[in-house]
Amino acid sequence: MCRVRVMAVASGGGHWIQLLRLSPAWKGQDCVYVTTSAGLRRDLPSQSQCDCRFYVVPDANRSRKLQLVRQLAAVGWVVLRERPGVVITTGASIGFFALVMAKIIGCRTVWLDSVANAEELSLSGKRARPFADLWLTQWPELAKAQTGRADGPSYRGSVL
Image 1 (tube, rainbow, N blue to C red):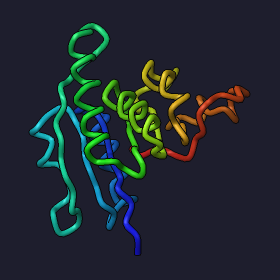
Image 2 (cartoon, helix red, strand yellow; image 1 turned 180 degrees about the vertical axis):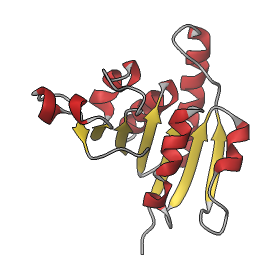
Image 3 (spheres, rainbow, N blue to C red; image 1 turned 135 degrees about the vertical axis):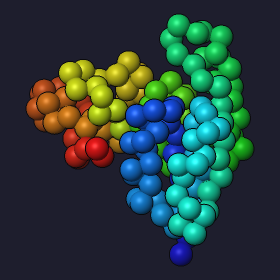
């Protein structure tokens, strides 16, 4: 059986929790986790369930522009080093940068917008659209089928 290299990317907090709830989907694959805090390593499935690598990149947000540049460079380095077959993210800026870099090198990509975004898509989620092969929301009201927007995300359920 050919294993796929799955890169799972999320910032800390709710984004990380939601990403880990998806981890059974890539059990048995070659896993790479990328996040913004070294302390989150403790949340990974036990080694008997998950043979994976773990990377920490700088945390960043819109108000810290220089940190965004550092985060982009660090995420780009990890994507180039690992050469994943698919990148999946629940956000935020770290996930957006991972999708952009992954698309540049020809990877498949999945964006799952955070469940916290109940009334509108996140800014990163909106910007991720051109780079996501599969663009998902966790709220049926925000899905293209409900809004009538042809360019909207799909709804396939919620992870929380």
